[in-house]
Amino acid sequence: MASNLQYGFANMTKNGRTIREKLLALLRMPDYRPSDRNEIARALRLQGRDRVEVRKTLRELEHAGEIVRIRKNRYVLPSEADLVTGKLSIHQAGYGFLVPEKPGEQDIFIAAENTGTAMNGDRVVARISRDVPPRRAKVRAGQASQHRSEGRVIRILERARDTIVGTLQQTRNFYYVVPDDPRLVHDVYVQVPPRAKLPQTPTRDDKVVVRLEAWESRHVNPEGEIIEILGAATAPGIDMLSIIRKYDLPTEFPKSVLDEANRIPQSVEQKLIQGREDLRDQFIVTIDPDDARDFDDAINVEKIDQNGGWRLGVHIADVSAYVTPESALDREARRRGNSVYLPDRVIPMLPERLSNGVCSLNPGVDRLTHSVFIELDKSGRAKNARFAKSVIRSAKRLTYKEAYTILQAKPNGELSRRLHAAWELASLLRRKRFEHGSLDLDFPEVKVHVDANGKPTRLER
Image (tube, rainbow, N blue to C red; front, side, top):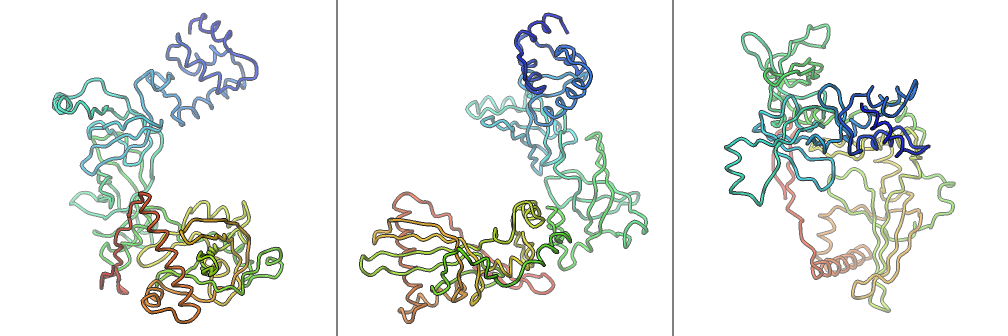
C-alpha cells in the first residue's frame, strides 16, 4: 500500500480509537484501494498482538456484513464493490430474493442460476449485476416503475440450517432424500448408514433427518448423512414429529432445568404473599378455549352504579416470582422464546410443573399475579389506572362456549352479572375502536380434530 495512505491515515487517527474504528476509518478513506490483511496492518502501523487483533476484527466485520472480502482476500466496503449482505429467500421454482440487512434497501432478485450453493434462509453476500439478460431486460423496460436490482450470490456467510427433514427415496444405484420444504429445491444424496450407527436400517419412504455436508457446486446435488429415522412417512404422528425436527423444536428440558423446577413448591408460600395486594376475596375468572391446559390471565369487571362506569381488573400470572434472572429456567425459556401449540401436543416454554401448576391461574387456589386496575367512565374513556403485584384466587374457570351460553340468558347470579358487565364494556370499547378506524382482522379460525392415529375426524370453526 502506498506510503501516502499511511501518512494520511496517521494524520486522521487519534489516540484511544479501537482497532475496529481504525479499520473502518481506513476503508472509508477516499484513496483506499482493496488490500489484504497484511497490507491493512502495515497501513495501520500495527505490530505483534495488534496484528492478531486485526485478523480477528476483520472476520467479525465480515460476518456482520460491514465489510466484504473480494478476490485475493482483499477487503472493501460493500458499497464499493456492488456487494450486498442479507438473507436469501428462495421460491420453490428455484429463484430467490435477497433481503438486505441494511434498512431501507430494496430486495434484490436472484435468478435460479445465480443462487450458487446457497439454500433458503442462508445469510449470504451477493454482487449486484450490471448486465441484465435480454429476456428480463425487456420485462423491465415495460415496468420501469417497479425496477428491481438483480444479483448473484458470491459467498455464504452462514447456513440457515445444518440438517433437513425429508423422505428417503431409492434408485437402482443410490439413495437420496426429498426435502419436506419445497424451497429446498435440491434432493440430497445420502448413503444408508450401517446398522451400528442407527437403531435400525432406513428403508424407502421413511421420513429421516439428514445432516448436510459440504456442497461445493450447484452442478451436483448436495450430500448428507442420515442421523435419525423418524419412521414411515405415512405412519401416525410422523407428520408432527417431522415439523418438530424441521424447526429444531426442543422436546425435552435439560436436567438442570427440571431440577430447578422441582425445587419450586406447588402451592404459594406465605412469604411470597407478603407485600402484595390481596385480591383473593374478589370475583375473578379465567376465560379460555375448551382445550386450554394453562391459564395465564384472568379478569374481574364490575359496574360502578353511581356514575355509570366500570372498574376493570386484569391479572397476569407472575412467572418472575419463580423464574429468576439468569437461572437455568430463565436461560432455557429465553432459548425457547415461546410455547408452541401443535394439533396433538404443546411444547411449553417452561416445564409443566410451572406452566400447568403454580404459574397457572387455576380456580380455587392462591396464585401470584401482576395486576392492572382501570376505571372507565360510561363512554369507555379510561379515567385512571394503576399497577400492583397481587395474589388472587380464581373463582371460576370458564370456556368461551360456557361464557357465550351465559351471555345468551338474562343476568342471574353474580357470575352472570359480572359476565354481562364485561361484555357490555367490551362491546363499547370495540365500537369505539372501529369508530377510530380500527381494522377487523379476526379471520375465522378452523380447528381440525384428529383421532388417535392422527387422522382428521371433523372440522370446527
